[in-house]
Image 1 (tube, rainbow, N blue to C red):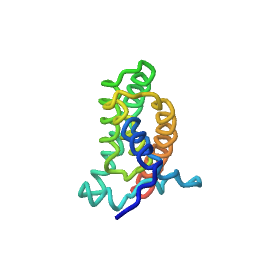
Image 2 (cartoon, rainbow, N blue to C red):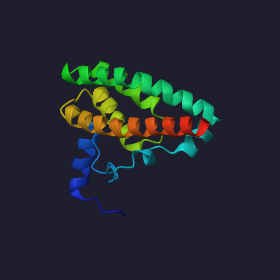
Image 3 (cartoon, rainbow, N blue to C red):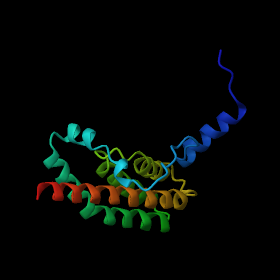
Image 4 (cartoon, rainbow, N blue to C red):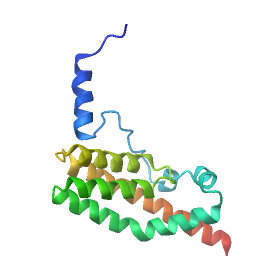
Length: 150
């Protein structure tokens, strides 16, 4: 029989309530934002590099609106708006293997569903950092493909 650490129940209930996990993966150190994207997995999932580049273009054209919607929902303590905006952003990132950004968006979505936004600003700040890394990586990918194609 497994012995339960008394703090585990508290941690589990905190995670359920807030959407924050004590075991969230740390952001990798370094400046290589291109490593945040698993290009081979994205191509395998989408079926072609050409389609991946279209999805990247769409994401880069629309992510700032989604981030603005999340920022506004957090500022206005709008749980329903946060659920919608965070879910839309999370779904838009699904092909990029951007785990830290996706985890932050999922945490915000969960907070909205639970109606507990007490840590939403903290998680949104992490999301901003991770979205910055993702967009730099995606921009580098597009630049690399344009250079390769010319």
